[in-house]
View 1 (cartoon, rainbow, N blue to C red):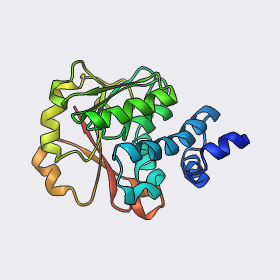
View 2 (tube, rainbow, N blue to C red; view 1 turned 90 degrees about the horizontal axis):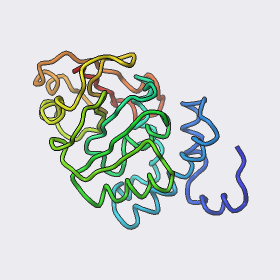
View 3 (tube, rainbow, N blue to C red; view 1 turned 180 degrees about the vertical axis):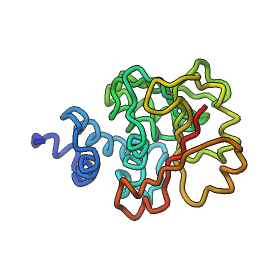
View 4 (spheres, helix red, strand yellow; view 1 turned 120 degrees about the vertical axis):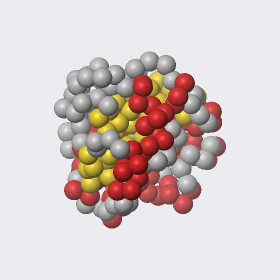
Length: 224
């Protein structure tokens, strides 16, 4: 991938190794996807100066701790075209926006109850021209429609989260996994998952990403 002098000047604040990190773990990205992931870092830095959606101490680790972390779900499942995904408590757009870049034929609806966060999401979606993403300021319980999967990053304990959203999930199986929840969390989750009293699978992300950040990070899958 080559960049014009103008593009290099525009994106100079984002280290190129950030995009290289994504490409390393997802080597089949198209040129357009690489450009979108490259632009994504700069857009978050710009928006974060206006509306804080990422800890300012964490901006140097944006590609590892937020973008690559979001893409951990893609190591568990490859969404088929037309799959409907609801991202609950999306914050600044994680995991929904990185996943939407990776799966351009999958339909994503990103929701958060904090309006200024959705402002950031919508701004980035517009800048990247992501036609497969909609964003809404709304509580999860009030979302209309049905979805094949609900994704999220550690919004609350799983039992409470399940209560919010399980009725939003359509029954069935159109992908390699039955429709359900794909939840990014970390640490020892045995007690939390025991509270749920439902079958689940735990996928350790350190098996896919050999970086210290992912040592205790997991994707929890709950079929619905």
